[in-house]
Image (cartoon, rainbow, N blue to C red):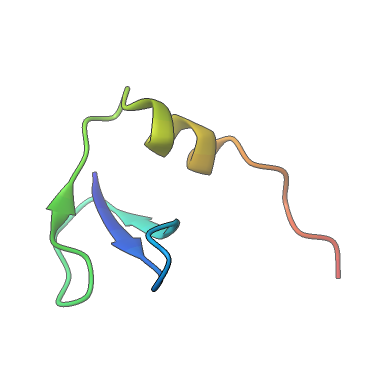
Length: 44
């Protein structure tokens, strides 16, 4: 998956296709990507 990162380097978005703002590719089993995808949903 292609990831978007914030200024601090944290993943803030993951996409199946590269985007102008998300060109870094991480394997689907990358620990950082898995943690991002499995984070709790925000409560508003």
